[in-house]
Length: 392
Image (cartoon, rainbow, N blue to C red; front, side, top):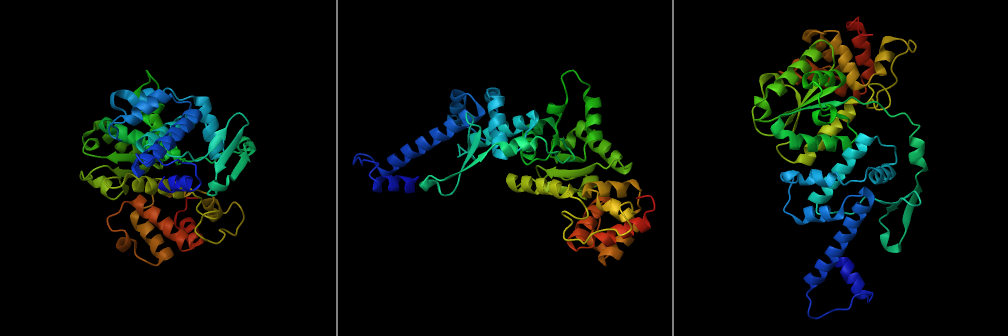
């Protein structure tokens, strides 16, 4: 703001009043900038300006943002058609109604907590164009892209990604809701009880159905969830599916320093006791990497797999995503000692030394990752096909 003010003074656009201080002028500029930011988000989300400004002027934090339901009331004023037009233009792809709702709510939440910011781009809905400002704003140059690419995306099949079941204590629901929204914003699909369970539906049946449809159970571990019977039952259901070949991967998000129960200590976990954004980025990166194919197109530089035709065992396995290969291996009921042999033959190290006390699934996760990083995917898949007769 100081640079803009000084530039305007040099250009003669500002008449200096000796009664006013430099800080007075900066306050004016900041207020005008925020007014423009508010006007932009009101235009593109259709949100009610008076309610938005009132919430931004109130005392607010992540913890009390929805105090007395005030943020929920504001969210209800979002114009879904305007939000859809804006978000699809900025993202450059077609968005489903639930994703529009999540992204719009997340954008609004961030805007309030960060005291406003410049939107990524602005959309002139009247002419159906996205206008994105570049770093060369002073010269008035802009990049203008029509929405044809977005319309073309409607006919492009979207990649299916495994859903993440968020298991949490009701006391931690505000954190869980924020995390679910942020994961959705990063294109990680989420199963969240308040969104998935319809009014009047059987909670037990719907949760069991949810667990049967997801690829991951993200357990938000805290002193509250440690005492929650619901969370324990969801965990045991997921572990049962894992043992019986259901393929549900248990991931832990630590919300505080409450000690993990023994069966969770060896699981993949992300620490949210420090910086939230760091934990979120680590979690999203894990889900994205786990969704990549094992061989080729993200195989970590591994050479082509297979040589006996499209139907040979290694080639079939190479087409699987990382999470699906892990699920396939788990379904064979591979014993720990046999996996240790495969590990040593492929990586030339001892699994017991590298992964002491880790669960079988964690060892599988690490084995596949290391094979990808070292370009040893073909060797790993050949070994799996030789050692596990029912894997193909």
